[in-house]
Length: 123
Image (cartoon, rainbow, N blue to C red; front, side, top):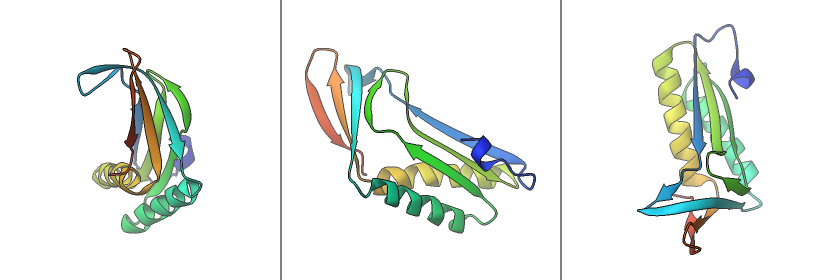
């Protein structure tokens, strides 16, 4: 992701790597499976464009994986480049929050005890 936003005008590159953790709500998590609505790719592109517009001079790259993921694997990854660090940090934070709010992706958590639950990734 960082290479996707590299630009000589930008003195800061902030990245985020949302990885699958081994617990949630006091339960051990064995793995996750993400499912996406067919519109998810378009929505994530719209979010990236909105963040780039909201933060002038920023370059934005973002992707959310779908399918089965193991503990420690990346689920949501993004990078923002900006002329200055504060703008890059703010834009990256806004990007992650907006993706989680708007992109129609659902998480199926499979717990260590064999039980599972579906969680809306929106909100």
